[in-house]
Image (cartoon, rainbow, N blue to C red; front, side, top):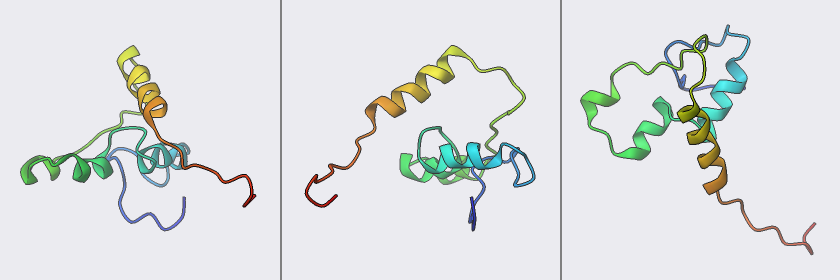
Length: 84
């Protein structure tokens, strides 16, 4: 990912080997991050707090289900076959 204006998580820097994947998921809105806080109308004092991904922690079932639900609910744009 080039030209990142804001890191999605405080504990995942550009030096992390998994940074492009984690940042990409956050930018796509598939995982909750600092980037998605502005869309959720969260108060200013909560928005300024730290947000961690914890890349070395095991995934919970709740995490996996929430990611899957984000993918399932995502509306992809309609494609016109004639324009392709």
